[in-house]
Length: 298
Image 1 (cartoon, rainbow, N blue to C red):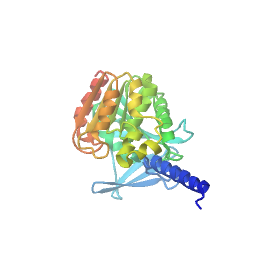
Image 2: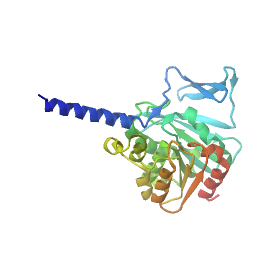
Image 3: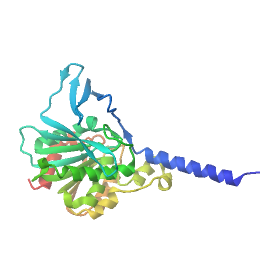
């Protein structure tokens, strides 16, 4: 005889496990051990060791075990509290010998951390932008676990923190997010639009359920919790937005960018590019840099 009570427990447990699996699959953090204080990056043919020094974990880059890497910008590593209850690590990156015209708050994608992802903003700095890149809870040197419910809290906390810094006073302010960070950027802008002057979303998915359908079909509607979405949030944002998406994006299809754009208010622009997922800020930096300057009235 079938024990329906036990069977119902089994199916409930199966649904719960699948729900957790779906929701956890959105996040693939690189975690840096605060005690070890180092991390290895592989950049093209180079091996770069990153050492973190002092109470704020200031990074030092060493290429191929011997040469200290120098940049045409300075990095200030900071730790600050988040509404999530965790301590976040952020980098304030200021270009040398360039008049600062604007500040970019950068939200990276679902994988890696700011040590490996901050390079995506480097070429845009030559157009007069300083960058504040932040790691979400459970990413890099930030504490806590990587959870989607924390990410929206972390994004808002990062915005409120950096807006209080004296280096940002008097500069126009843009949130720039890529992929998962693009979905987050739109969601933060929809809640805190009064604090920013412009929004850029590159290679972003329109909602967690929408991108979930790409991999799990109708099961996404059952198992994926939405919490927040770009296509809903942009409806509450009324300042300039630039949506960037590649026709060759095989991670997040072009239709997601189109959906975000269609739901956004004016003034808005949809910039369609070629090449890989979230490659725009590097390959099309001149075009994007000029669009950012236009966005802030320069």
